[in-house]
Length: 359
Image (cartoon, rainbow, N blue to C red; front, side, top):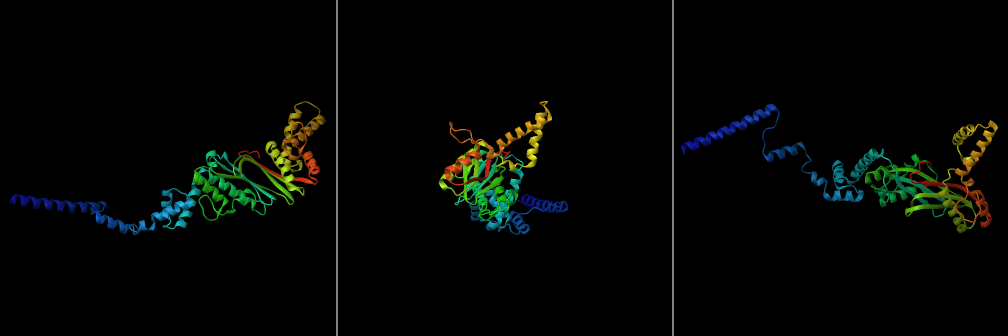
């Protein structure tokens, strides 16, 4: 018994000495001494004052609300709320900024697919056409992508004056793919990129308007309501019967889709574009070895042929029966005036084919 008591006391003293030595060595080494679990928790709460109250600041209901409002993944919603002190609106801004950053990284990837959206207003006096690009057909078929394309087209339709693409991107949409409130067109497209993880770009916006007459649209290979792979708008100034004018306009729009004109008339061709063609024709003609005056006549003939290919009014009209005589578009317009009993002027057109970088 005595020996056992002595052994117990010796062991106790040895343990106390070891603990003291441990605290001394730990202190000199810069490490905290050993602590009980309760001491460590208390120390953590002192170091992070909000640790115990954090859970109450980001309730699951807030995470759920943010997910429903933005469609973002659950962990993104949780991180956004943590960074925003539990404020849902601030978290939405945080997510949008995060989405934009993600989209910026994807801008270097090629956007080869997408949709053309086409709309004409109720008066049929104004039409809008836009191209929204994505990387894959899979994304372009999604309803979220289609909705944004049509929303952007509708916003362009509502503009009092046509805007260049960069200026139009600053215009405000009522909502975006991840925004319940107003958002710029540019930011909405970035939200779209963040939603799908693809490079999405608004490539072009255009419009056609008439004072008296109709704007007629044509959608080739439709992909849903008001969206397609090739879209056309044609503007006709006339006081002719509306239905008859619309039927004629539809044929013209189909011709534009098939013939791909670049200009309405030769007068619209930029001087530099015509001069570039002349240089090519001159080099081709010079290699023939003919006299200079003959070369110049050859250049004139080839230039006229080029005009017939790229100018709408000078093109051969393609939408006609097999037995019909070949006619120019300008001749078809003259015949339409006789048939409709009123002057008809083709004042403008827009043709956008998905992925066509020559338009």
